[in-house]
Length: 116
Image (cartoon, rainbow, N blue to C red; front, side, top):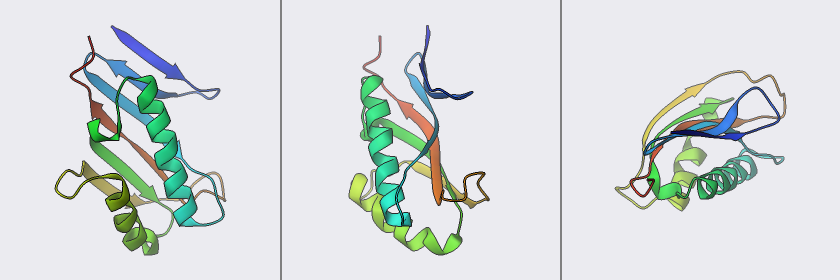
């Protein structure tokens, strides 16, 4: 069975397929990179709650940064949300965004063995 958490846009914020949760793009808002990444994690947390999952269930993320100079701060913030040695697999790259005020986006995959 496939379940989707829709958005008003042309993508789902999450698609649940069996025990896997495919997370669509999540971005945060704020004036600084730090505000945006924390807000992004809050959006991810809310999406995962709707999927009966948590941040601990994330197994893979892709992080897209507008500026590679934000990488050290991103590394620091990941430690706020994941325990040491329990980080998801991650790929980080830089890109331009359509929205000029966007500094970063995250998508990824979670695994939820509690899903029936």
